[in-house]
Structures are given as structure tokens and as C-alpha cells.
Length: 252
Image 1 (cartoon, one colour):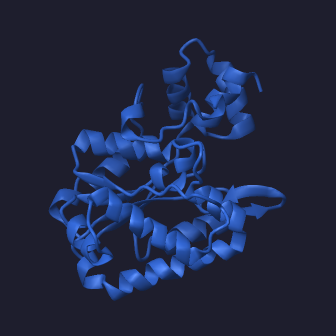
Image 2 (cartoon, rainbow, N blue to C red; image 1 turned 180 degrees about the vertical axis):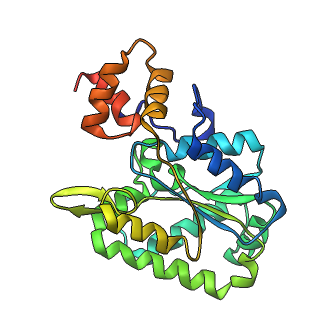
């Protein structure tokens, strides 16, 4: 679908990348991964800022050995326990192992384990499947049961997780004043507080851009667009290059 043309879903899609201050911060965090374990890096940013693009570019530039978790659900009408089981099943099948007890042993061989678009938005890669983000949107608050299961397993196997690095592309959208907004970027002071709180137990890297960086990113994809036109779209959509590129191409 054209509206997803500018969205990066896996490393092979990288093209016309523009380095920014946010990317340099991410690169600095990733540089420590091969020599340390037990780290959890949350990459946050408003939809349309290119969290995946930055993650995959940093992985490529650092030549990291990454295992990317994939999750393609058969239906949105699944309970949290079933989704968690399917996640483990997907990893077992991908690694060709028979028991979930072996998963952490295999994951420790990697520089980091990544949960990004092939987990959250697998429906954009496999149109006949349901991505985790679609499932959470469909289930609403009922999807929150998935997270205590993850936390329980983490605490239960904390010693094993001490030998594994995790990179999480984190977006948590709620309805606020009739619109879907990301709690870490789109709700003013509350978002600032949410980022501070997340930064207490985890490493947080926020993907955001200056006006100049946004213009440069858009022009890397659409080099015949006038700067003044881009500024008009920035006023309308914010500093979100993917949304701006899509709007320009579709004339919205």
C-alpha cells in the first residue's frame, strides 16, 4: 500500500539515510552492546519519525549480530496468554529448537535481541497476518495482560537475562481528546514525565528531529520539493518525515 512506502520494516529496506543528533545518540548506545550484557534499550519516538530506520541503520553501521523477534498472528481475537505462547513458538521455530527452556540459552549468543517492526507491524510484511500493534489496537485495555506475563518471565529468569541485551522499539498510543497519541511524545508534560520514569530502570533513546534535520530527511526522499512547501507540512504534521513524505506524494 502506498501510504507505507516510506516506512522501513527490515534492514534490507535502508536507503537515503540521513544521520541526525538522535541517530548519533542511538549509535553511542549501541556501541556498548558487544562488550556488555543485561542492558535494555528503549527506542522511543512519535509515529512517523523513523524509529526502525534509525535502529536498522545503527545495527548495520555497527555490524551487530542481532536476533530480531518476529510475530505474525493468525487473528486479532486472541487472548494475552495465546499471544505470548505464539511469540515463544515463533522463536522456537525460527531457531529450530524444541523447548522454550532453550530460548534464552540461544539468545545469549547475540549482541542483542530486537523487537521492532517485524514484531509490532508484521501485517505490513505479511498482509494475511495480524501484527502485534493491530492486536493491541483491537483488544484495547484487554491487551495489557500481555505485559505482566513478560515481566513475570523476566523476573523469573533474571539471571539468564543478565546475559542478554534487549532493544525495544517502544510506542504506546492511547486515545486523548479524540485522537490517537503516543504517550511518550504527544501529550505535553505528561509525555516528558513518562520518558523520565522510563529512563529510571531502562536506557531510553528518543528519536526526534530539528526543523533542519526534518527538511534534510524529506529532501533525501523527495529532492525536488521546495523547502517552503516542507515547512508548511511541518506546521501541519509536526517533524515527522514519513507523514510529510506521504502527504506530499499524495497531495494531502
